[in-house]
Image (tube, rainbow, N blue to C red; front, side):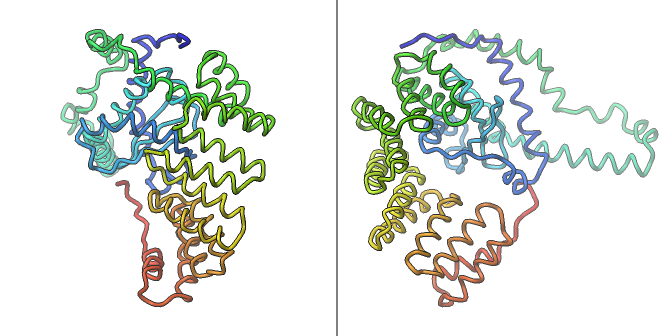
Length: 396
């Protein structure tokens, strides 16, 4: 395997010192408003890898049963942050980190914020700050300073040293750790490299992807990146040949089959694409909801009544695993519409708007769906849930 430079201890320490800003940034808006402005990225392969990184950390932090969602953010900066029970990680952090342990450390840092209830503490501090501002307005800043001087030392400042001190402290702790020079398992490093090259190809452009692949020359990750780059920017036949070679090297890799499905869809071979996606679903131990939706999309493109019925089943299977996939509901609405199930199409459209945060249109389509449904049936009740929903303005 091609050797790559290690991040210095000081660089790693600076990462952790910087990441403490993430909670404060996330607290600046309500969850609903903030989430709608976050450019979310969905990818079954990357999500599965990051969850594998996070699982032992959440277990150690006592968060294994708390339903923590991990969300990928399309942002080139190295950052991560938490809001409520969601951990957001920038794709820039995932691509910049050269080893799995760099990202594992980031996740551990953010898991500490969740386990420590730091968000609630920060909310309390913000509320106290607003209260003090009101007092200052009523009594006058001078009198307030006189009556409270020396009594309001911020405990956060006491318990959190300045960044340069935190870096120095972390350097000492890292050097004392017996695992400091232990490399990541080769198989995990390979998955990490394949994640990095995928992000480079799809989000950073050909030049950035080529630079990264040159550093990984001779590896399976470089071959993976080359196949993806050829699919996006080159010849479809060549991309398919390169992907078939990847599948030969790793027959049980679900995401090589997914790429094959993508290529076959671009080649206007939806039936073959559906078979490739279905193979990906069967190999996917992470049980991503995205892959069954891809099967459904391919079956919709086949266009026969039978394939459309199968598409509805597949998409519903995917949404059962990943109920907040707003794009999946759009495809479901289209499939129902082509089958002539207008109430189903209206409800799926309502669901799509709902999980996109567009509650006004979600309610409109839910009411339209209800008009064509039997009162009290399961779909009618789901539409009623959307109609009755009142979005919270508070951060949870």
